[in-house]
Length: 446
Picture (cartoon, rainbow, N blue to C red):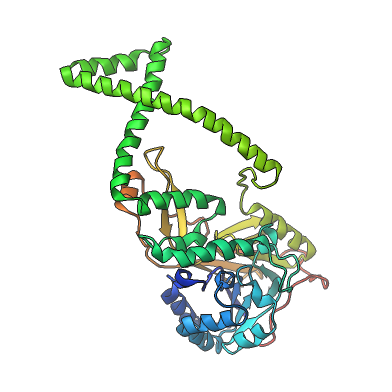
């Protein structure tokens, strides 16, 4: 009987052209090689988005799996080898939803010792407790599958990926830097416009133009500050800063006069830009309101990304009191949240993670620092009859592909994991199984 379960998700392997690069392939192969050596009765569960089937636009149907096997033969051979000793179970996510629509995928993946369960959710028992597992796309309005199993029941996210993500994979290699392929690493997706502006400014813009713009931005910020100081002095609110500036400039004679004239010209420029921006702001606000009336634009809203999954977990816990851990992925944010003395576990992603950092110059585009978090969760019985949840991250150096200017304009962010290494959840007091609970149990040969 299986005693230990490993969980990973959101590998997003595959896609058009540059999306075919797998930065973590060596680490994934090492992880798969290591599992049989741990001398455990274990099962590996990949809870969704193992493959980027949505991102293939040049081939259709089962040919996508053929393309994956041809492109990553070492991966599928390792799956076959690992699966001979450690059961490997895969459930569909939204990006590989096609796996749920065609029974032929079950047989094809079984040839590589991968058990495909064509279900929204599955369950595994650990002692007297239950682990409920799903991908999480059903809680995302843009990626919810309206009729799971129907090959034609594609959500809006499917069409976005076909038109945007796949296109990014085809175009990425044409840039000065191969950055467009990382579009799937931008979370939330509302950050994509800022991320694209950032990469244009720091990577694609002509160097002569970029290094001409930076001094302008510096002078513009000085001009804004000088305008504020001048207004404070003009209205008699606070004259000390202006007096200090004038006193310092007076010591430099003709040079001070030139600097004073330059600052005055800067003030004129700032005021001119303000005058121009007011009607533009009114115009764009009116256009935005019009688009909102037609439902084409929505107001930005950034709720806690775990909130809706916590509510989903509560529903699962209520439906089946034996469930002690709810596992999901989809959001690419590894986390562990305690809810009603039970646990909600997000398995994160193995893709690059991008952290936004605002630059010292307020008017410069933000910088997105890339890092890796090749994480997995290990669930096993605890001594008190509950579940021991262990979290581990496979070491992989950050790419450090930021430009010199990006590093000069920002502070390097600290990487901190909010997920504890070990957490124990006690078995629910009312842990008798509800015979009507949904999900599937561990396979007999697991």
